[in-house]
Image 1 (cartoon, one colour):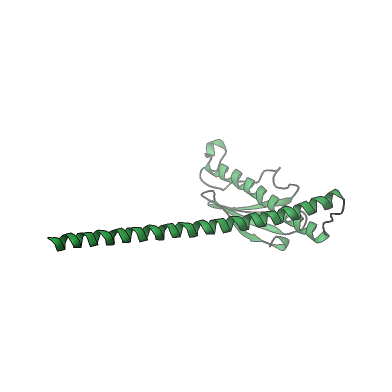
Image 2 (cartoon, rainbow, N blue to C red; image 1 turned 180 degrees about the vertical axis):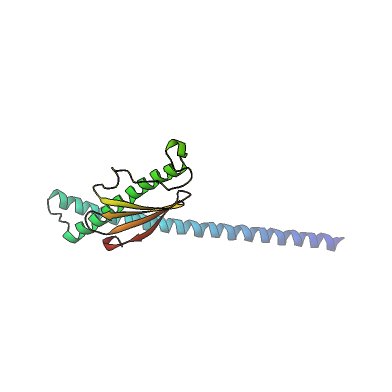
Length: 173
């Protein structure tokens, strides 16, 4: 009997030690995770402080009239802006084409097909680009050609209304 009692006490002590060590390990893991999060936040704050300093310097330069943007930077920003506008306009065309596809033929739509879709006269030429389309029953391929001769952008619209960029040429690459 006494050995059984001693054995149970030893078993309880071992169980207590095991649970305590697991709790200590869990706490240590939590502390390490917390330390990593604190370090990560410290790096974010450091980066933000550096950006603020840079922006304050640029603001001071602008206020003093000393801020000059290089011609190359202006050119690159113009290309990016043009590309974004053309993509936006192609997305607008894609939405119109998909609405045409799902609209019944009796209401002037495609009745489940893209065939018959045409780019409206106010969208085939915009400030940014000239637009063309290759129309198939299950897809349309839109091409936007930059008026500034930066290149072309092609998108495919599938039967589910999903768009996919196919190709960029010229400066848009």
